[in-house]
Length: 185
Image: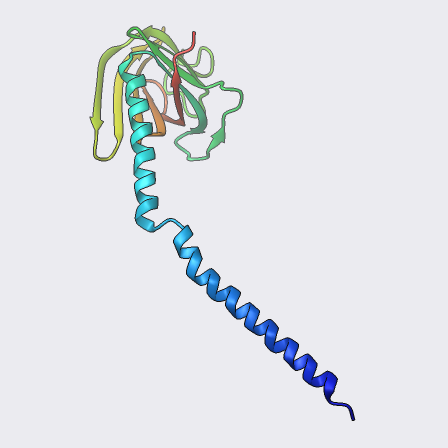
């Protein structure tokens, strides 16, 4: 019996195992050097939040900005996706214009003229507050349409996530999630 092929095969296996071991060891040493540490990721995320917060703050302080909803959340909590930028709020020069689709209960007659929440009128009782630590911005105001009065709350959370709550004297409240943009006429 010829044992030579058996020993050559064992020798090749030994060499392959040594090469594999060296590669694994090399990867274990170098990958941590290339990867971000947890604190670096946290710092990068905080810098990004600060940049978004400053951008949102500048938009709001300019007095002219737009909110475009991407999601509608009625009181029954069944989220609906908004297509084609059809749900919006525009604020400029002390005036607010909006159209938001509405899914809920109307509590008084005449409140459903167009079906959705619509207004284009002067803002009353405007207030805004900034939380530098949490990177949150809160805005509230009152605006009226022909038949309804709306309380509008706009919250910028963590500098970039934007929610608008619309409360009416004749309908259930609605929530809209989306983003802020520069005012477009």
